Image 1: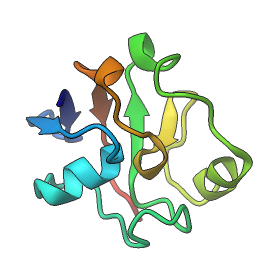
Image 2: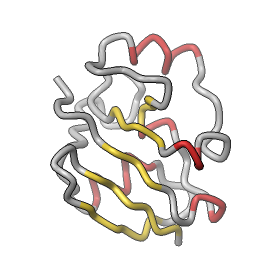
Image 3: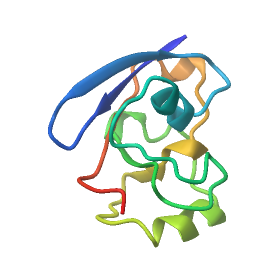
Image 4: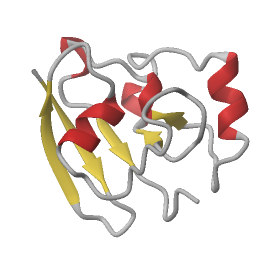
Length: 106
């Protein structure tokens, strides 16, 4: 299990253990973390699971693919550290990952 810290825009933190093989989005949804809506259920067909990946973890979460880049065009407040949490697969190497949510997913 990897411990992932989800930080709401308000600063509220949720430290969740997520099983390898799930996505960061699935870990949030299964544990009812507010701020990740996941309207498409993880199909990379929306941007409502938008997160900011802490700089120390960007190399470990992989590269954005073309579909993710396209979907991020629909997100608000996109930054260099923006990712869709449905596209980040949890591995043991992500133990300690920190992601922050934007103010809004819509």
